[in-house]
Length: 119
Length: 115
Image (cartoon, rainbow over all chains, first blue to last red; front, side):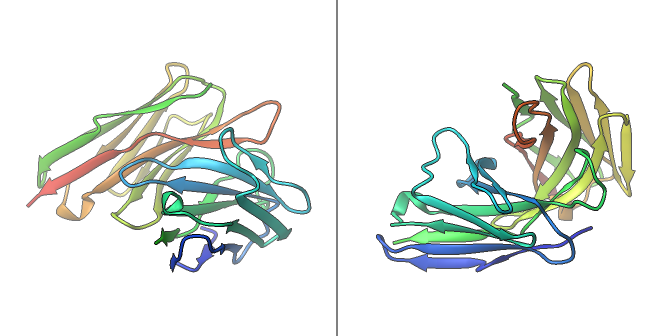
């Protein structure tokens, strides 16, 4: 299957700082990438849908000014957690849709996740 | 609004047993359903993907079925091993009709296989 990478895999930061997480599709192009958040012992919750060259679409309850998403190319989307606080500590996972198959049936490929800890 | 549920929430079985994990979804307007495995503190490993037109998929000791009309899927694991211990998530790719298609996850089943 197609490969999606995330960087960094772990990050620890102080409260009030901003953290950028990168999501890359390594061997395919993705017009659409998705960002999820997972709190301990909970399932993945979709935060936003990132589209190359346009603004991201945020889910209800997700602050777009706090979670900045940039999808500047067909292989890279970034999530920036601005002014991070301890309650933002979570596991962030991205996924990307492979265009090669065409249509809405494409499988989404998931990155390995980024563990964010805000002190 | 699509809701995905999984039963049981947790399961503990002795090694060698066959087991079934259940997933239900409320809206049948899906493109596919996917089963994932997640080890503690790790990302997702895709196990099986079933397109909406398919009934089942098999990979090794795993077999997943899909009954779209009733909103159900099962993951069958044969001859369970301690290495199968993990959380199993099912997810549907939802046809949103008026916005971007979304993957919606169930809460997961935590499986423990005892040696």
